[in-house]
Length: 250
Length: 50
Image (cartoon, rainbow over all chains, first blue to last red; front, side):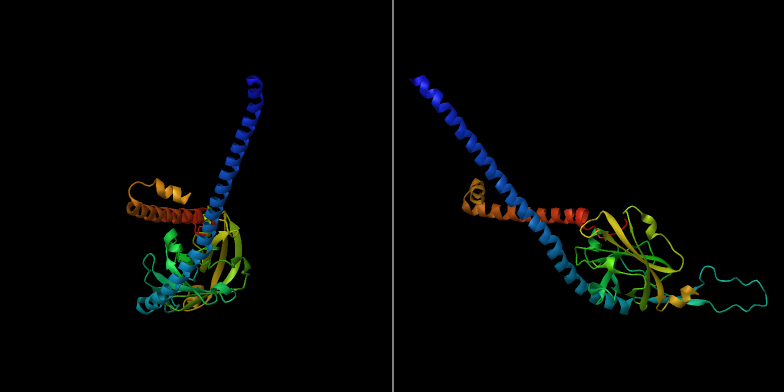
């Protein structure tokens, strides 16, 4: 009799054990899903809301700092001969007075020294402050200037980088830029006007885009595609107007 | 679960409250650093070549 009872109760007990295990697994995975969901929700809120709020707050303060910088920075006049200018071969030729380039003192790392405006883009038509440096902390303000490259409005290739989806996303709409669109960069010297010439997509390791160029160029770089740091969207724009444009183009 | 974790903290209730606040603040700061790191490496690095 007792043997019969044992035989009957064993399968029931193991089934209950199995059900208990299943319930526990479902409960644990349910909790994990809830916590993972909260973690991801927090991540999205942090990236899209908090960083943008902080960058916009910073930008307001930095815009005021840039105005002070414009008023205080020293601007020098430097003689400039564009490369490729004709040399005097005839001794009777009267040398022309050297053209004068306006050059400002380089800003300190992290200092707000320029304002970029792109009238054709909603996010940038009212301007965004540019700080010196492209470190992670510099770019938390939105747009940074690569220190090893010339300042905007100077001969060569001035490079600026900015966030596409976070920290205010000042370069969010860069895929909408077309050749011929105007980019204005205000510095202590004045407003430099660039015209978009080319848009390309490259890998983050293709450093050649930041290399020197003849004339005066502005290279703007940002992440591509949106919500990914896999590639870089690069805008090349040429200086067409402003205090130094005529001097540089010769 | 949170109540169980709170009860697992050592000491009397006021000490547990202080410990809970410290742990929450440290966890929050660590979470912000983690979000920052994830955002910079996965979502949007700022587009710089450096």
